[in-house]
Image (tube, rainbow, N blue to C red; front, side):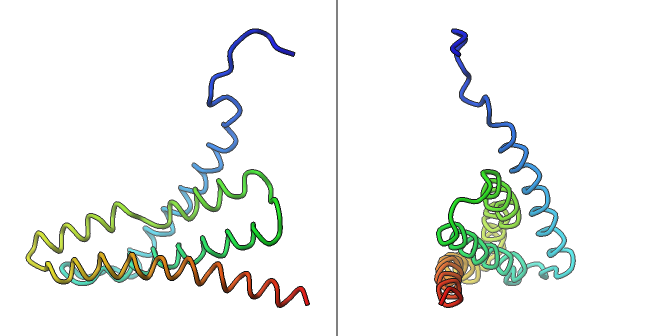
Amino acid sequence: MDTGTPRRPWQGQWPAVGAVALGGGAGAAARYGATLLWPAAPGTFPVTVFLVNVAGCALMGVLMALIAERGSPHPLLRPFLGTGVLGGFTTFSTYAADIQHLTDTGRLALGVAYLAATVLAALAAVWAGYAGTRYALRGSAR
């Protein structure tokens, strides 16, 4: 029934906003924990952030393959896991800050290597996670 009151674009989105917020908090806490457990020495290759970003991209590929192969999940699953947990776990801001710090402290080659390696490894990880999961799911269906 139309009440004549215009709907705001965000109405009805609060469950998704909540799912993203809860997932994002969990993902960011996991990333922070990883950097506390395995800190990178200043001026060296930021291996922990690199591995977190690559692992998060691989898991995103797995998630997308599961959704593509297994059908429609609960409507809050992608906002919670994809945007929330994995979005909070991976970090573009720390990656960019690490590159800037390396280049600002005279480690231009290392900064450029980190920039390129992260992009290439992240793209490869998404593809591998997606392709590997699809292959595993199709093989288990036989």
